[in-house]
Amino acid sequence: MVLKKESGLKIDEKELSRILRERNCKVTVPRIKILKYLLMNRVHPTAELIYREVKKELPKVSYATIYNNLNYFIENNLLKRIRLHKDYDIFDVGTHMHSHFICKKCNKVYDIPYEIHQPKKIKGHLITDMSVNFSGICKTCLKGKIKF
Amino acid sequence: MVLKKESGLKIDEKELSRILRERNCKVTVPRIKILKYLLMNRVHPTAELIYREVKKELPKVSYATIYNNLNYFIENNLLKRIRLHKDYDIFDVGTHMHSHFICKKCNKVYDIPYEIHQPKKIKGHLITDMSVNFSGICKTCLKGKIKF
DNA sequence: CTCCTTTTTTAGAACCATTCTAAATTGAGA
DNA sequence: TCTCAATTTAGAATGGTTCTAAAAAAGGAG
Image (cartoon, rainbow over all chains, first blue to last red; front, side):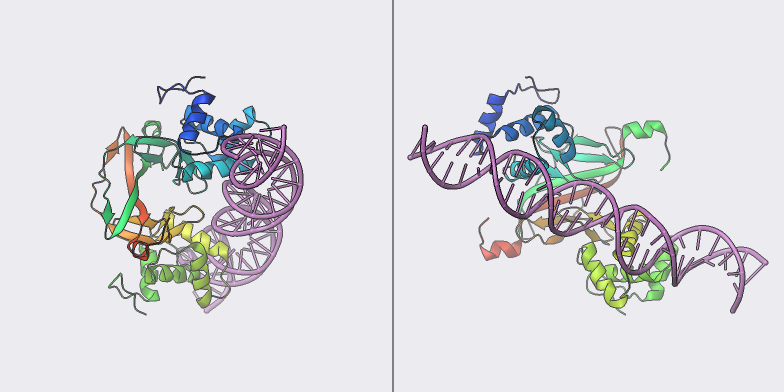
């Protein structure tokens, strides 16, 4: 079982168990399958896509399990919720800090590396997270010369 | 009818009609009431709050009208949708560029002024908008010394 | 102003992503 | 292996948003 493109890591289910235990996360079969899908397919999936894909390996999995575990991963800092689309959320296991660009035409989300300094405090508020989002028209849609 | 705090402008319904016509937006009674509420109460409202407040002046207004007009204002660049909360969106008529800070404890959203340069292009994508969001624990909750 | 056409509004139903419920199962430690 | 708490499951429920069809309103032309 080998991890695709964006990462050079090889990840089997033993490795996934180790990752979960490392974070004091209880190891369960659905949890491993969901995390495996997320780590092996860096595609900014929706919950529905995750459900459909995990169901291929685990035919009895339910939506509740998918959502429970996505929220669980978010609480445990393994995953981030990305709210760029009007009607649905996508999820991101990306490890290093990066920003996102969403194309207003095709709705595709691209990762953008960035190095903006995250302040520790602003106006007395403690800052623990920062996100930078861009939108516009993507390279591919620009080539298409389609009007908006 | 005088606009509150964040703005020094005075806005009556004639002025609101003018603002709408200026943008080639058809003028209707619900549209004016909604815009008036947004401009006079810079509080990052939810659709539900807008509905409740507008209903005070326009008892027969429906949710469909609220949502139709919020989407209409967004299309016409009078309004921005802010998706920082897990379960709902809030709206922002703020004119000058600013970022947002959301408190993970009380969920309050604060405006934060900023001056980050918005690039015109990144990796071949045309950039038309940029948003910067911070999260953490707000000043007020920090004072409360409440654990998380 | 009146007529006409198009857009908007309304009330209520429908939709659909997500969460909840209660019972069954599983995981991990004793 | 036993036990208990956490998780999973199927299906129902929830709740924010959109849709539907009919009525009303806006705005231009005459």
